[in-house]
Length: 122
Image 1: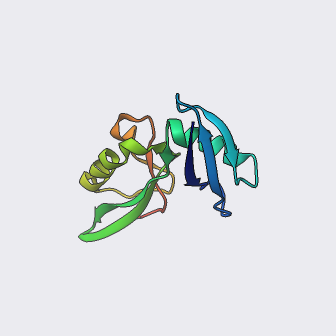
Image 2 (image 1 turned 120 degrees about the horizontal axis):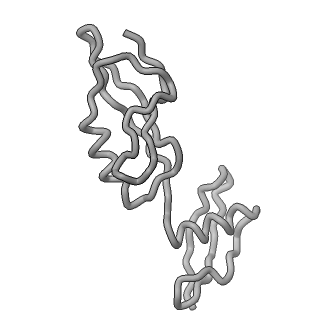
């Protein structure tokens, strides 16, 4: 068995977790969490870590350039983040967008959409 330390990012408390895992990387014990969400976080983080992704996308409208903030609609696999950022970096829009509009569907083939966080009108 081994112990893994991590910081829970589920809520603002940021609990320092000590996770005991067996030889098959199965969670045996979680300590340091102040709520049940810490246990679920530790189990998920060891098997398939996910993160929210935030960035900006360039919009060219009427001779002006705007940067619209975007985010992943939900947490996405951490190993897909760099590929997702390459897609976001390459994106350039030439039309107005509404907050919540899908900018890049199924980014990096991970099943998560990138959506606008702000409305930008022409």
